[in-house]
Each structure stands twice: as C-alpha cells, then as structure tokens.
Length: 124
Image (cartoon, rainbow, N blue to C red; front, side, top):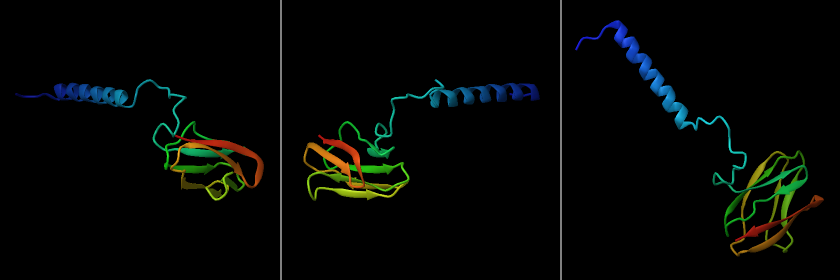
C-alpha cells in the first residue's frame, strides 16, 4: 500500500485529535473540581491549625498516623487533656506526624500556647 504526503498528514491529524480526546477524558474533562474533596479523602489524615483554630477530621481510625499542619506563623501544640496521652508541638509553617490512640473514643485536645484553641479528636 502506497501512502501519499496528503494521506500521511490526514492520518497524523486524526491521530493527534484522538490523543487530545483521550487526554481530555483521562483528566476528567469536566473543567471543575469537587469542592468537597479534601486531602483526607485522598488518604492523608490531617489536623490543620489555621487562624488559631483546629480543623479536625470527623473521625480517625484507631492507631492511625495523622499529619499536623500548622498554617499559622506561630508555634502550636496538639495536646490531649488526658495527661501523658499525646502532646506534639508544631512550629509555624511546619508539619509533624503522630499516631492517634489505638483505643476508640473522644479525646479533648488543646493548644498549650493559645487557650482558645480547643477541639475533639474522635477515634473510631
């Protein structure tokens, strides 16, 4: 079978169009993101500290590793009200990880540096 320059250009054009269509479909093609998707949905469990407040996930699996993300410029802590259970300090703009308790339950948390920063970590 002989090909001409015109048929090669046509074939190349169709191939390029097909590849662009394939790339669009593979990337979702909708143009918009799901505003409810969080990093926790992608598998990473986080407690975020921002504006001197905790953003805690609804629940965390027992013994899970949680990433603490400090978006503020000042140091915070994630401290359990149960003495000696956990007390993790995170410098401003940094992250740390820690393992939550292996026992299901609700754990009150606070920041040792900012009395208004309180929350509840639900393990279950």
